[in-house]
Amino acid sequence: MNQNAVELHQTALGLERAFDFQTARKRYQDIVDHFPSDPLAQTAKTKVRDMDDLIAEKETYQRIHENGRRVLTEIGMNIVDAPELMEILAEADAIDFDNSTAVFVPLKADYIDRCLDQVPRALERDPGSRAFGTGATPPFLKRPNDDRLMGASREEFNEIVRVVGSQTDVTAIFSLPVATERAMSGYEAAQVMEKGFKGLKMTATPKMNDEEVLFLKGKPDWVDGTSLIVNLGVMKNMIRPFLRSCRSGNQLLLLDLTIAGQSGAQSPESLLTQIHAQVLFMMILAQTLNPGVVTVHGGIPGVADSKGDLSYTSPAQPLLNAAMGRVNRWITGFPSAQSGGSTSLTEVTEEALAQSARSRGLMRLYEPHIVRHALGALASLNFFSLEKYLEDCQREREAVKAFEPHRASLGVAPMFFPRDDQALDGLREGAEKGNPRNTDHTLVHIEDMVNWNKRIAKEVQARGYDPYLQQTILPALAHEGR
Image 1 (cartoon, rainbow, N blue to C red):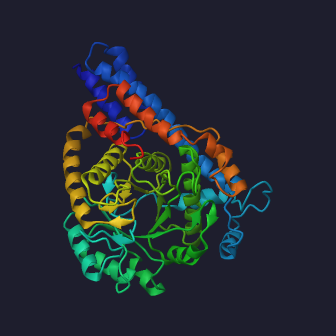
Image 2 (tube, one colour):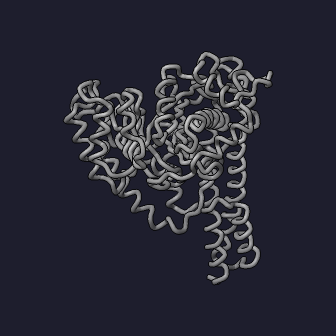
Image 3 (cartoon, one colour):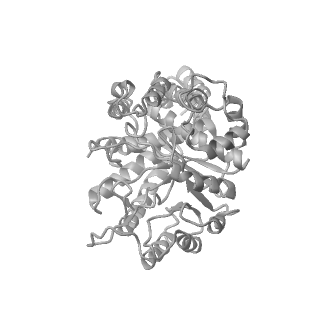
């Protein structure tokens, strides 16, 4: 290989990993133009095509961020029946009372910008990208040969923490793994996690009292998971715990678990725009109450199966979460937490383990930030299984070992994220009709997830990607809906 071509290729890879796809494209094109007979020229040709797709993808993510802000200024959030929130925002001069076309309560654009500028872009105990862990607080513990629908006992929870604490080579985040029986409070569970796991930990605090919530204050290895908004409106039962968490000074994980076509828009772009707007609203409230508080963007898009239930079997679920992660890694710079690596199956079978591994493989390739729910979960996050957790950890070790030889040569894999020029209009239609399920926009985009899946598979095969990429992507996409 020509040394100049090699150096150009390394420079282009560095630019690509820094998400500067425009300049990376120029460097790859230089190889094609000036070293056409070099072995790297054919690779560079494919890379030029990839850069074109990545440039378009990044532009779409930029639009998602801009349209997320426009949702807040042009459509608004339905907080009229939440007087405490109205009072907080009115006193801060955040509400645009002159806007007569918004569906709900709109915010001022300059206020949005001031608040978002205050959001820290760094997490002190950041585990880095591709950081997989537990999470979601499944309500039930899956016990071998036992079908009881119960949380974990004190003894079982202590054993879970002990085991997770021994798997820190692959478990980067320990989010509350399962609900506990009444004899053990959430505060007591957090105390056990504090002693047993030294990395980044996450829990939920709504059921803690005011003094217990302060246990997390000033601790860079703890994140307080909370939520407030769904379907552009307020969850009234979450107002008090949300505001308390914001005022406490705890690091916050702002969660939005909107499901496509159910509580959210159907097309990938409109769904991510809605989720992003809802998380931005929570960030703005947090910064209003506690300027400079650390807020992790917890936009976690979900998809439904044919019965309308959350489906972690669908490959659209990790794809959507990886794309939401890219919005933040490429555009906003906010720390973010996503979801992936689980299954809709309820038993610890070979297929359940394989589905989880395929989902993690997609997310490893597309490189989101923090990924909860990736180890030990079953039945679309309804169960936690210690048996599955240990199997997931072992398979994750093997996957990371297989990934390492390719890390240096891999740049950024295009996701071919589908563009939707009517995304904002679709969200307004859903707001006006009160539900996204039967909007014209939803009906038009009903096949978007399946078509996106097919597009990725087609492009991966047509571009002749190396075997590692094909073996990571194609099997994961071949199990749609199963």
